[in-house]
Image 1 (cartoon, rainbow, N blue to C red):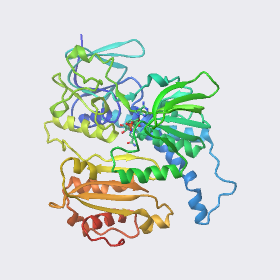
Image 2: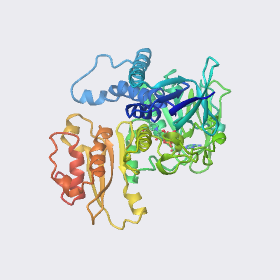
Image 3: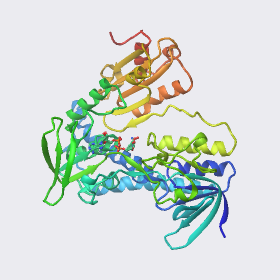
Image 4: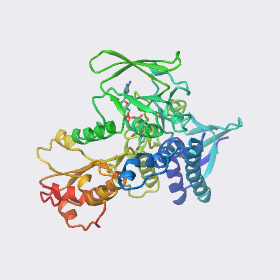
Length: 468
Ligand code: NAI
C-alpha cells in the first residue's frame, strides 16, 4: 500500500532543496528524495568546489601585481594540493551540512534512494539497502538536474579523459591539459589548472568565446585569457582522442580543415550538459520530454502530467543554480496559491574567470536582432577606475545598453574585477523598472568598482564624465 504524501520532491540540488525548504515553511508535509548527496551538482561537484579552488588559487595570478605594489613573497608561492583539496571539501561540507540542518529543522523528510514513477500518481523510492518505499504524492517536483554531455570520440575513462565531476577533485595537475569546449566549465577549470601550472589548450567548434555576449566584449575577454597563456583553437572539429600511448593524442581539424593533433596528459570534455531524466519512469506517468530529454513544462512549470512539475536543469534553458532555485520557489508559490514571482526574470549569467564576466538582460546584438533600430550604449573601462587602478586589477569594461525612446535599461555586460557582484546593480535596476535617468543621479561611493557601472550609465545617457 503506497503511503500518501503531500509534496514529493525528487532531487536535492538548488531547485529541490529550495523547494523543500520553502514548501515546508508554508506548511506542506514534504518528502525529499535524493540518491546521492544533498546539494546536487552545484554544492558537491560544481559551483562551490570550483569557486573554492578558484578563490584559493587567485593569489597565484596576483603575483605580478603584488610585485608592482612592492610585495615580494620570498621564494614564490607553493601550492599544497592536498591542503587545497581539503579546503574545497570543507567548503562543500559546510554548505551541505547547512542545508541538511535547515531541512531537518523544517521537518522535511529525506528519503535516501532513487525515485522513479511507477504509474500516474505513484512513485517508488529504492534505497541502497534494497528497501523500496511506495508513495502516492499529491504534488511532485522533478528536480533531478543534469550531467555532463559525453562525446563518443572522447570516451571518458575517469583517469585521463574526464568530465568536470572528476577534475574538480583535482586528481592531479597534468603538465598539459586539453579542454574540449571553451564554454563556462572549460574556461573556469582551464583558469584553475593554468594557475596550478598546466599548459591549457582548448578545442572549440565556435569561432570565438561567449556567444551570449557582444563581439567587442567577447574579443576583450579572449585577448585577456590569451595573455594569461590559455591557447584557443576556434572553429575546430574534434576527430578523436586516442589514449593508447603514454600521452593522450587529440586529433582535430583546424579552422582551415587541416588535420592537427595535440598531446596531453589529461583531456577534459566540457561540451554542455544533458538532463537527468532517463531512468525516472516518466513515460509511465505520462510526463513528456523533448528530443534531448528535457522535461516539457507549461504554465506554472507543470509537466504534461497533472500535479507533476519540473524545475532547474532537467527542464532546460539556462543551466544555472540561481535560475533553478527561482523556478522551484515559483512552483511552491503556485502550490500555495500565492502570486508567483516574475515569469521572465532577469537572470544574471556569470563566468568566474579572471577577469570575471557577468551578463544580464540583452546584449546590443540581441536587441538589434529583436528589431531595435537604435540603442543607447555606454561603456567604461576598468583601467580608468580609481579602485581598479589602486588594486592593480584593471582588465575589462562595463557595457550598458538602453532603449533611446523609453530610457529603459535593456542589459549589461561586465568583464572585470568583481563583475559577479557588480552585475546586481543592473539586475536590481532592471527588475524594479528603473530608467537611465533614475540611475544617473544615484550617488556611488568613491573610490569603488561600482563607479564603473555608474560611468557606463552616464555614457549611455550621453553624459560621459571621466572619459572623452
Ligand atoms: P557550455 O554550453 O557553456 O559550453 C560548451 C562549449 O562546448 C560550447 O562553446 C560549444 O560550442 C562547445 N562544443 C560543443 N561540442 C563540441 C565539440 N564536439 N567540439 C568542440 N567544442 C564543442 O557548456 P559547459 O561549459 O559544459 O557548461 C554546462 C552548463 O553549466 C552551462 O549551461 C553553464 O551555464 C553551466 N555552468 C555555469 C557556471 C556558472 O554559472 N558560473 C559554471 C559552470 C557551468
